[in-house]
Length: 370
Image (cartoon, rainbow, N blue to C red; front, top):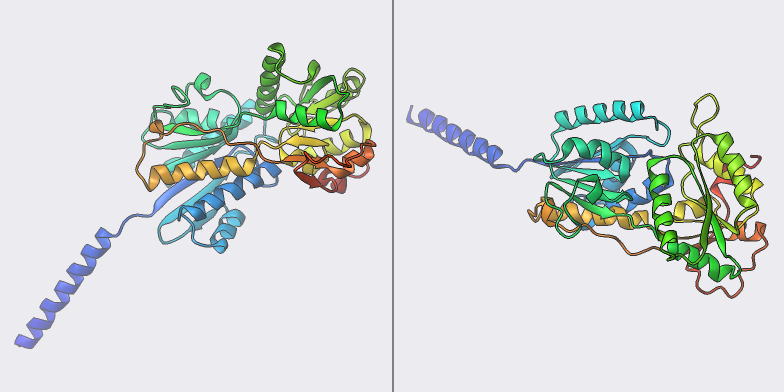
């Protein structure tokens, strides 16, 4: 009888210990990543690579297999963390009412998922989702924001953000892109801007207009076309080609057909490359990959990596976002597309300032006849 009672006591003690251990086990960290764009957008792929590299370096993810799982499925769960991703797809769903509907859906996800931290990629995610999370208990880290986050009202200053938000500013290496073009073609004196009418496109143009007014650019900005009409964009490109020595392409991802349907950005790029025979430039690597001649890359990889480094500072080291200074990464490579140079009759011999070459054009590979 004593042995029986002794066994019961031992069992009760083991259950108590196990229960206490379960209660003491730390909860998994929960991170939600919200991208303004979509999985197929090359900028999104660059920022994802940088963010995942940081997740590995700072021990949120343990292996390439976990990175691949997260990238493929928009979710990964490990022994210590659950990371989910949501896409706003605002390049295709660019109307205000569409973005507002997407915002409601993502805020519902946030209420259900209850993340310990939210990452916001680019201006639309920051402006719409960030506005809902401002001054809440949820830490927020943004990347790829081109518009001034101080003017947006999300931070007090770059050095001392305050509030619950900090992140990575996208300064835009537009002057460096123009300087690189002039090294390639010293005769360039003027340029024009061709842009869609997106939040990102307008922000880039505003920066260039401000720098041009202060005469800080190595070429003069003489004209611009900003529209979401594909027909107007094409007509504008033809007109700009007759007015300027070079064309700066900011964005062409929110263009629409006459019936309102979205135009694939690669289709727009292919039309441009086939019909405009003018030196061109942009500010990010993916445009050179699509077929544009030259860019000083404002690296998406670096934007994502720096955001991931800040996640470590908040969730592993206990720093408040408001105490973490906003950062601006150094530029990426000076890039040139060899195929575009050949099409424009530009000799690249001896141009040792070029740091990376791209062969071929993703736009013309997909839409050769545009």
